[in-house]
Image (tube, rainbow, N blue to C red; front, side, top):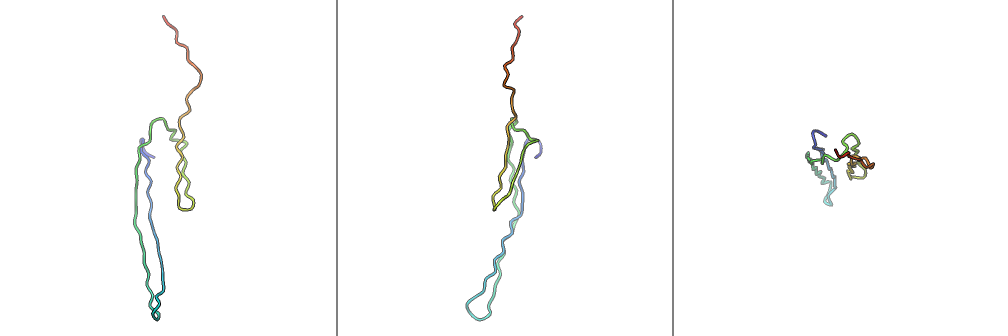
Amino acid sequence: YDEGKLTVSGKSVNERKSEGDRGNHRWSERRFGSFSRTISIPSRIDSDRIEAQFSNGILSIVLPKIEQSRSKKQIAIN
């Protein structure tokens, strides 16, 4: 998190090994690369309480709102 922007980046590595049907023919395929995404975070988000969790290939990000005072403010009229 930096100045109202959240950047998520990572690397993707996927390796698959298979065996052919003819003799001992074998091959290996690999997919890899890096990625980066930046999103703007609204000012009403409490940046100190942002949480992220990665589970089963899914990234979940929680952006809690800043709690506003619920008490009413009285303004004196002069």
